[in-house]
Image 1 (cartoon, rainbow, N blue to C red):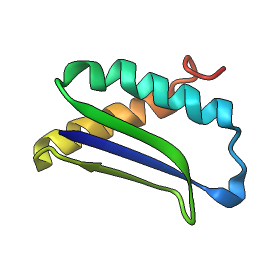
Image 2 (image 1 turned 60 degrees about the horizontal axis):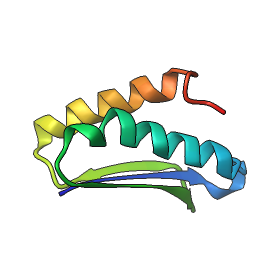
Image 3 (image 1 turned 90 degrees about the horizontal axis):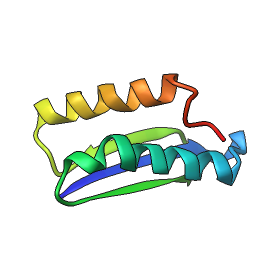
Image 4 (image 1 turned 30 degrees about the vertical axis):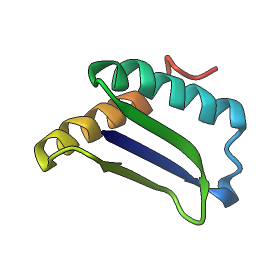
Length: 77
């Protein structure tokens, strides 16, 4: 099962609506291609992205899709 975890640095104070919008966009653009998957977006002690449950080649593809989502502003509320 695919798992995507996105953590924002808690000191950056990213609004909850931004986190929710990012989660929804990841679910729409990435999870829709997988039978099972989980996306978690929240705050942590540092900014990080982790992907598990897929092989290394698939991780690279997913990471590129995540970068494309992040660089696009169409998902921002």
